[in-house]
Length: 320
Ligand SMILES: Nc1nc2c(ncn2[C@@H]2O[C@H](COP(=O)(O)OP(=O)(O)OP(=O)(O)O)[C@@H](O)[C@H]2O)c(=O)[nH]1
Ligand SMILES: [Mg+2]
Image (cartoon, rainbow, N blue to C red; front, top):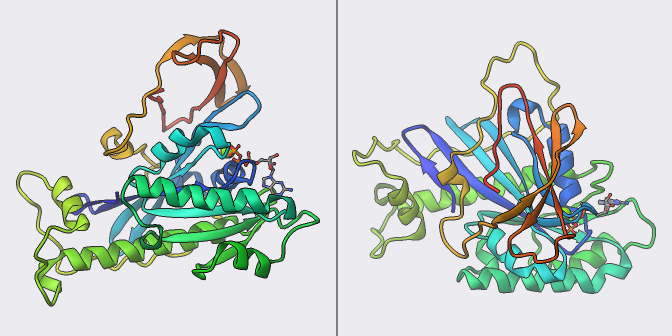
């Protein structure tokens, strides 16, 4: 669930890319990582198999400066699309604030798209959450390929709710930032609505029960509650743009979200134990790849690769 920290004037929210195997979720996040100014984003953490299939998730923190006077952080996750990783998909959905459903536009993927959408509905139900109450954007990916469904066919198949939908080609980057921008806007509008509802002063009727948004606010309250703003912040984001790195921009680099904010707050525990670590390999001057074996995996030959990226001002140590 999103966290408002009124004292630090920060909002933190979670967006999950969902969709069938190989539809392009990881490629979307890689493009976002490449396109955004390094000051707007942290490092990309990918937990993948040797064949570059997502095993747990990809994670990318991004930050929008000054949305209604608030620093706004989004934690972007992808799920593993392969059918048998459902418990991981469920875990990644913990506390989600917005979903981007990436559909594979190829005609041959019709069934997989439907199954993945139904799987999303089911996994949200596990958390007693209704998909219609969660900000959501559709992305019709792989538009560069032949033998794809038309946008109208994809809408008829997957989007009876008429959610905003974007045609995209994640390999070229077309439509990637537009999709993300639309989702960020929806999430912020949703948070604004909830915060207005949770603010008794701005509500015509006092709610009789504690709402989810109030619970979230209570959870983040410090022992001496900081003064609340007069009204809910005006959270209209600017478009997320491809920004060339500006040498004169003195804003601090993105700080990795505090551990207690990045961790799921409820649901399944998600802490795989490492049984064995192999020899590190240098992928590029900033990135090493570590082969690891999980304690849950008895096959000594089944190693996963974990990529760890370093940058000068921002050192990330994963918990995994
Ligand atoms: N032609 C084309 N290929 C794409 C596009 N997006 C992704 N791909 C390719 O599709 C393959 C799978 O992409 P990924 O981003 O790894 O897919 P994923 O959804 O993360 O897959 P899982 O992690 O297994 O769920 C890769 O070879 C990508 O290069 C696209 O828009 N067009
Ligand atoms: Mg992936």
